[in-house]
Figure 1: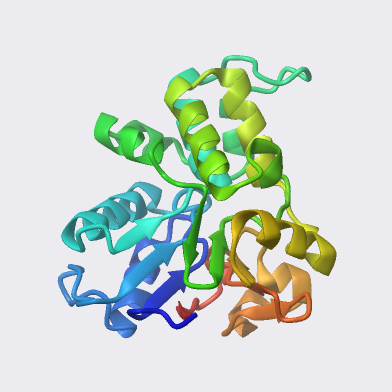
Figure 2 (figure 1 turned 180 degrees about the horizontal axis):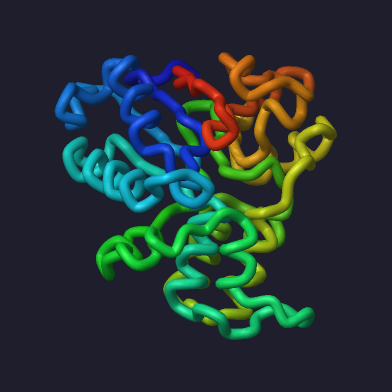
Length: 254
């Protein structure tokens, strides 16, 4: 299915706001003042804007500004680190898991930066709570994580989106914890049958995801990763360029 306008996808930013801006400038999507200039293009950031890197709150604010300036043409998916940030903002150190772990402890163990949380404004928290879990652009399904556990939340795209929206609206710690478990899972798409299961349920002929660094999968240095990883008989495309580990990053045009 041909796309009516160019669609660009960027993997996990992880607090590297300025590197993200550079990638978008090089792709012709923002100008030197970091304002949207993508004309009729569409942009999807695949989640994990914050944590691990120096300026997660800056990355969130850039994504919000681009969404506003583009009239919704630039969007962001919900990643596990967005769920983590919502959880720690709402519940801090409240015990959530049976082993006594709290959102704060899990967040800090996974690169959470107190400065990001301290700077998070109420409208920014609400924006995070409205992020969609998946999107469909033509025949390409966009997700954050390479997991089929999304289907435990909803067996169609509409049901999945509604279920995630309700969890984020409700904000109960146990429900957010379960959502974090889903969005943190990885590795399912190495099995082409599991890729097909997700595509059959949620739509599309191929799936593009972030979450799992290409450098980790291919056992290469992040600086050596300059393009997406296509696998599972061409049905899955990984775009996690591992910016936090030293990757230069790239933008994928669908």
